[in-house]
Length: 216
Image (cartoon, rainbow, N blue to C red; front, side, top):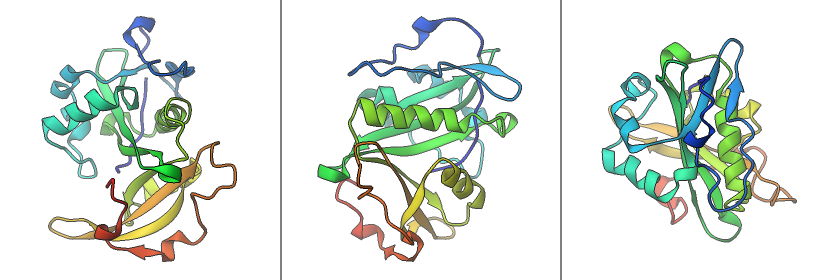
């Protein structure tokens, strides 16, 4: 899970967002206003893969193989959206999925990221709100979760502001030149009336990657 911030396009093409799919989810932020800009939030298209280099050229943004993005686009198109500028430039995107069983059925934020030149405009909250709304109203999930590097204090602070809390710490979740732990952060959805899917002091609950739930 990666942090960034987003932004929005002024073309009044409501038909460019064939978003409401399995249920009548009300998309209330098709056109969002940031501190200075209006932009368009629409579904991700396969051709966007040729346009998102400005977003993915960042050390905190993972770049996956093409088949990975296409799998999300095919299986969870309503959880994969892009933010476009008034000049039809890709500014950022959010990519997620629905997974789990029983009370672990939930929405997962695989990535949310913004091009460096469009950050700190206050649009990450709109992207997250969209994914949370779809997770709740379309998929009837119990919570939304995400993974974030324990060293990424800016992202952790942003997610806390959005209502997420640490559920557990996963040892060596990120591998590479240097391994790093991840926080599994969660936000309960209205279905979880008793808030059973979150806990206090999750920073002190350690698990190994192999101990994660089977759908991982």
